[in-house]
Image (cartoon, rainbow, N blue to C red):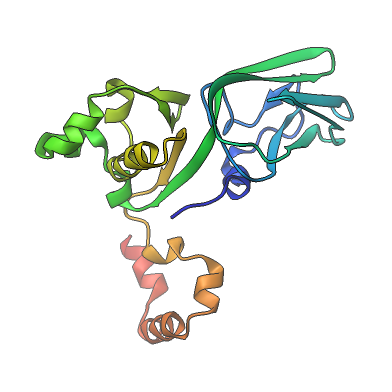
Length: 226
């Protein structure tokens, strides 16, 4: 499923400590990232409480103030897709933070269970087509892992989600714009966890299935067995 960047950037598991001791940007951002084209973009981070913060990127400069807890959010206006590596400069409280080699294009989040979590390196052993594309370097395809954003390369490709990588590689070729891939998959999670609330609320079929299941569901027994 695809989430435009604001939803992705709001993930609570990327929150920082309550009070910043230095100028910081949320971990979802970083050098070598791709920013979503065609929409207003929030950039978030931490700084000294009540300090002034400014951000410069792609000819835009925006400024604001950190909250009393040190949280700040600045918004870039809609950007066009760009294959040019550009730097983002963030200033605050006498400090400067620079994020390098940033592209603008499509950003996709891959979420789900073990089928999404399965790595390229495992599937490529029995998939010649996947093995071929995974063996290439693509500077316009960027992958996000626990250590940050990276250009697609044989080493980084093998550790990424196989489904998301194959999708993103083809998307980059067909659209001819930079593509950034970020995956958050947890094997074994109940499928219901991945159903958006608005989808559940609007589906009588889903509600009916859940109601029928709940009639004989022993939560206490299930937790004890788990």
